[in-house]
Length: 155
Picture 1 (tube, rainbow, N blue to C red):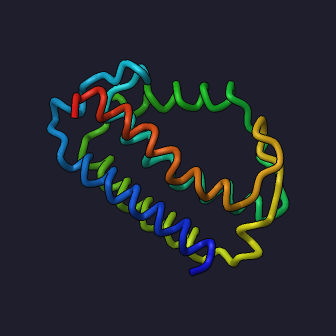
Picture 2: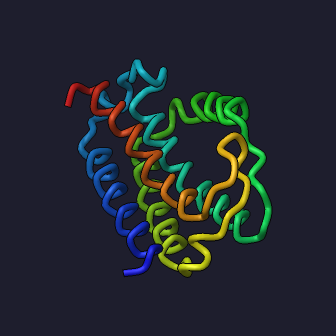
């Protein structure tokens, strides 16, 4: 199994877990605050959905030999803006975006060659990284948020 297949398999497993959990949440659950993140369950699931295509864009930038000029402050600003925009987003729209984004992100990761997985570029404050590291953010990112969601809901 190639590196991209393993990354995609890990991503698929993580997103299947996140989507299944999102589908199990009630409308009341969706509005529950997650104190560690200062966002509600619904906003965090929407944040995960928004992250799927972002990872694909970052991979494309790496493959095009363009660095990612990102800082924690830029991410914090984007997250604050997103929290405001997603606060009242319908649960089913977010779940639909989770599913659609997961499928596209999985295809993009799975399509990488071994050479592409090991291609390096600068990623803001994280320094020089491989495409594989960027691709793995696709499952590291939701894993952390899903943990916060589970804690917020007590399950």
